Structure formats: structure tokens, C-alpha cells
Length: 150
Image (cartoon, rainbow, N blue to C red; front, side, top):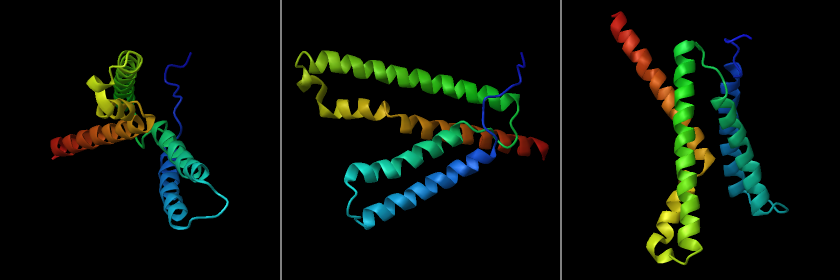
């Protein structure tokens, strides 16, 4: 069994994912500005959001330009942290649904708590946060390496 085998896509797919997100944003603006007859709001939302999700997935599942053991370790650590956070918020959301909605305790929780729990159970948030944390950590490491080289 090859332990160095990676199930990540090549780095060029990060670039494709980035361009796909940019194209999806342009498409969303065009769909909002030009109210095209024949497309209802759900179809327009689907046309705009599916490329964003695919682009984020490509960025998250692609290797870095210089992918080494440290980056693989950092990536797995971040995935573990974000999966744990996602499960924690899903559990809180489930508890909220059972306790507050089924037993009629909605005045205690309120709409704000429900919106916050829904927001933190949204996969788009975790994909963006994962990419930001990974890139920020890599930028910090590169700065430290350049500083130590001087």
C-alpha cells in the first residue's frame, strides 16, 4: 500500500475552481440584473449556486503548489477541526429543534438563535473558512521562512 498516495486533485484544479466561482458571481449578477422570462427564482438560484459549490469543492480538494508533508498534516488538522465544529453545531441545532420547537419553548430560544444555528450548519461557511484558514496558515509559514532566511 502506497502511503504517499494522495486523493487530492492536482493544483491546476484550484485555478479552475477559482475561475468557476468568478464566473458564477458574474452569472448571478447577470441573472439578477436581467430578469430573464421563463426562469423562476429557484432555477436562477440553482444556476448561480451550483458553480460556486463546485468551485469551492475543487479548491478544497486540490493540492497546493508545493504540497509536502507539513501541508498534508495541516490540511488534515483543519479538516478535523471543521468537521468537529460542524457536528457540534448540528447537535446544537438538533437539540434546539427537539427542545424549543417540539415542546413549545420558542420564546426562550427565539428566532436569532435559530438563525445562528442554521448559519453555522451551512456547508458553504465551512468550505470558505477552511480555505481561508489553510491559505492564512501557509502565508504565515512562508513569512516566517523568509524572515528566518534573511
